[in-house]
Length: 181
Picture: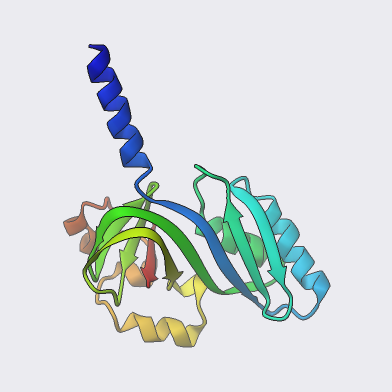
């Protein structure tokens, strides 16, 4: 019996540690001074999953590192930037993969978050990979429009799972993050 419990615990640990978002590069738009960057920094610092933040004032970029094992939430990051009075120009996340299969225009669940991959080749991901969030709230209107032609799935417009996502086992009304590599 103890062997079975150990085996189940080991398998669950392996399942939950297969992929994790470890860090991100956030570019904010509308920053004009060090005080603007400080406002964004202070808001981001309050997020419970944030470990460290490094700011580059010249490029309005923030290098974010997340606490190990913590669940990063891109929508909370966006909201904190907007609460400071600015917007997200781009958000690139780094995910540590361990043999996950990705296919173009399909979904993959990472730490409870569903990612819809667009403009990618079918491949198995291992090690750290950089993913660009291409949802409307994480890009300029011009860039969003460019990616909109990559899929006919309705979830790209809404950010929420619909009938188009059920083939990948995603439940209706689940938040979907759209990404490319």
